[in-house]
Image (cartoon, rainbow, N blue to C red; front, side, top):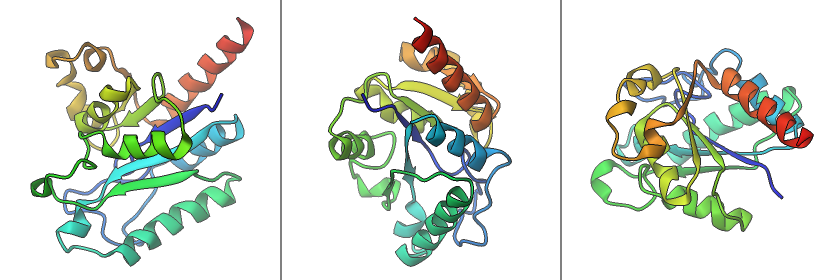
Length: 191
């Protein structure tokens, strides 16, 4: 069975910006995030990223720049002895009405198809409601981190209609979330 984890990018792996992360130079990893992904990878997890990148649709940066950001991420992971199994992104703006911009499930549909598996129970780690909402149709396990927009999002969880969102696991950052996942994995092996 494939052990899969789905991560949002901005605010989870790297610093977020209200004016968008537009260049590889502006793409700065959050403390401990690269090491956290490496720990998942070394524990046998397949790690993928699902990210809204409307800056492309808004004309703020192009695909070459997005690829440069993702190359920087990949290089840092390689240095840490890890790699991602895929980066799935939506280039559209909210007004485009696409099915891939989170909270729509399109990116997760593509991940399920790519890996030919059900995403039921798969952890989806994000810093916004839309990250977690994207996983609901697939019955993913929602995990919120307080980095990025996460602290603000945490305050909105109790008022959510979906029980899964109200019961989302909440951690200070990706490293703490990974600690939880790896501890849970050890517990499962003991049972």
